[in-house]
Image (cartoon, rainbow, N blue to C red):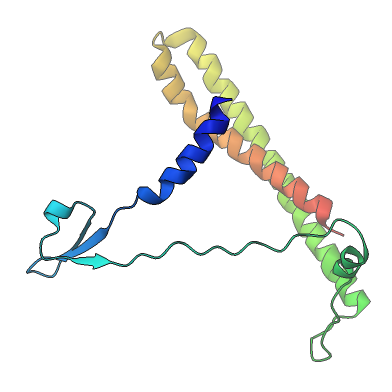
Length: 162
């Protein structure tokens, strides 16, 4: 109940909370802005208008407008075109390149995981300071994370490939 009283009260007080902004230029040409009137002697008041906003156009969920939005715009006649065989060849090349990159990243990921496991095994026997262990293992963990992210990105890219 209090919130219903508080909201109109704050809305009524909002226009009263207004501060003039002053632009001050010192003798060496440096600009300074302030809203404190006592510091603004010899400064000019800036006229700051409210921020203009434009609402976005709503996306229709159904109906004829939604059907028309799904239609592709016609391609201009001057637009360069590729025949189906050449496009199929490009798609196959792209798929082959992505396969090669994925297999390379998976190999690097396996190697990074092996190096991390070796470093974690060293940890068990030699160091007693846990923070030093974490600091030493951090680059190995980052390398594993990097290759995991690369593999995930390549798989996502391949799922969208034709």
